[in-house]
Amino acid sequence: MSKVALITGVTGQDGSYLSEFLLSKGYEVHGIIRRSSVDFRECIAHLEGQPNFHLHFGDLGDSMSLVKVVGKVKPTEIYNLAAQSHVQVSFDSPEFTADVDATGVLRVLEAVRACGLEKTCRIYQASTSELYGKVEEVPQNENTPFHPYSPYAVAKLYGFWIVKEYREAYNMFCCSGILFNHESERRGETFVTRKITLAAARIAQGLQDKLYLGNLSSLRDWGYAKDYVECMWLILQNDKPEDFVIATGVQHSVREFAYYAFKHAGIELKFEGEGMNEKGICVAGPENLIGKTLVEVSEDFYRPTDVVNLWGDPTKAKAKLGWNPSKTSFEELVKIMVDSDMAKVAAEGAAQKVRMNLAEYLEKGIVK
Ligand code: GDD
Image 1 (cartoon, helix red, strand yellow):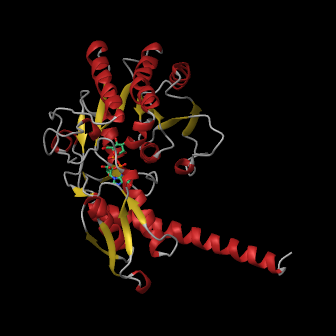
Image 2 (tube, rainbow, N blue to C red; image 1 turned 60 degrees about the vertical axis):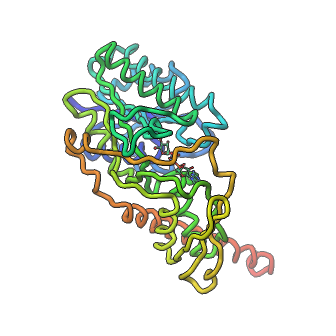
Image 3 (cartoon, rainbow, N blue to C red; image 1 turned 90 degrees about the vertical axis):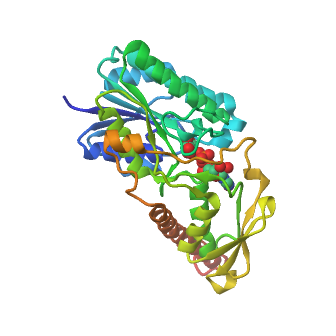
């Protein structure tokens, strides 16, 4: 039987990598996108037009749209990756976050039942290490108690439990991947890693003066998103439906991420001071930056409750799925992201120069 995957959140970092991965495995891939007047398809632009890649309009907030797409596509696997995924945003938009990240999961499960596919369609739910929140154990594994610590995490906890409930109540093959932070050159620009790599590239190329961050001591287990999508797929190929922690098993602070990112961009930072007064000062690198404060702390990026000690134990995924959590090291991940942003910023800088030159020429009447 041919394999047909349906991906919600297909336009995001994970959705785009998963699409590539499944296409390479011979799947027919269908993605759900929201109607919008602005273009947000940058991550999947290279896939559009491929014969096995199809897009459908739908929304996790609209059950009828889900029933229609699921009924039309008749997927053998669904990957529910769509979400309001920003933890800080969930404090400003808690109701929207609950609707998409909690009830949205229920809508996907119900759409599968409404279409009579509960025996043939396997469902992957994008769950999160944020469930461990105010952590009760370090490192965290599948048996660690949950303690969600943001509106986002509380909504995701509902998603996790409703998936488990449908597995037990209706015998559906649905499971959650409890993914720790996973990053890449396609990461959204407001998540801390990408914010840092983009700023390091801009500062190194003279296009930005300073980077403002929140809690520099926060600890995360950061992996490469491209490696993690393989695990989503492996979870659905397992003999029985089970939940898995996906992580590297290695932990670093936001401060360390910044240190390595700037270093790779040719700038060595020394951190001085504490808490709100901590600063990252350039001690080696381009002459004009030496002695300058390039990183400062701002209250704006602190959260009402922050999760500060995430560290995953991927033993179960290694043993049962044969997944390799060490494929891309922390240093390699930082390098991939900085290299990509250095090139992006250089291209933007060149385009800006062309625009400025043109404006100057027009002003001087050289070009008419
Ligand atoms: N975004 C952001 N911006 N975070 C900052 C900043 C800043 O300027 N400064 C410090 N941080 C700290 C946050 O307080 C948090 O402790 C840590 O950096 C990571 O923040 P994010 O990169 O925004 O990610 P997250 O851990 O909150 O959530 C991400 O990972 C989860 C998996 O654990 C998201 O992708 C979630 O959707 C995902 O579930």
